[in-house]
Length: 264
Image (tube, rainbow, N blue to C red):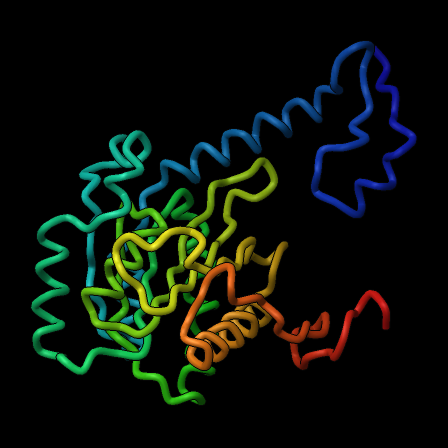
């Protein structure tokens, strides 16, 4: 059967969304159907892919970081997917490891960074280290003390607050793989909390999402995060009461533009 093209096909150049696919009779064309099945398989694989914490820890240590490998209370991936509550807390061994470290560093830290698999280890493996490099450059300029990097398996967002609290950190930043979409199996999310404590809610955190090559750039994500951190330290809060008013970076990511780029 002949493929009947869609007159809106030119719009596909502007978005990865599945629009203007055309049709063959009353059905999708074969290539569009196969492409959908491939994207669905990529999303499923991203959810179940295990994070290579050994390789990631090695790369971090080569860059001069001390690394602590932790695990949530969810013992395996199937439990993690079915019991989100277990992914929000550390297991006993990990909690003890952090407590022992905190006893040796009673002064605490300005910032704790947590890297966790979340729902897409693929996103973490591809984007966590390049983003961390941009963040580190700004941390050094502001003189913030940095806790050892925490690598966590089977983790949900809220677990970062427990890590920050146990390390006596003023702030915590979590880099976490986001739930895959059919056009974005490798989207990285960034979550920031000032004065992290167990029991914090989503309203107490700031989120910067869709960090990947086809989405939000590493430079812009780091720029927005540092702005939030500076404002949070000044106002001593984070979450819904802390708005992201960072100046937008130019398209090449080198310098900020003043004002709304849509009105320039």
